[in-house]
Length: 65
Image (cartoon, rainbow, N blue to C red; front, side, top):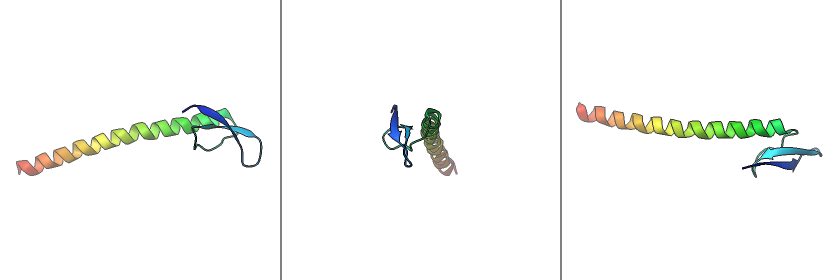
């Protein structure tokens, strides 16, 4: 999603990332928001993978006992 111009609640213009992002008074704020969203999405998938691997290992340990 690209960075877009938006209206600030108190008036004036700002920037936001995507359709539902918070409106920031400068472009760097929108870039920080974009980086935070991408970081959380990337790490969420890594967390899911680690949880699945952990579940498989738990099942293997139960079967070996």
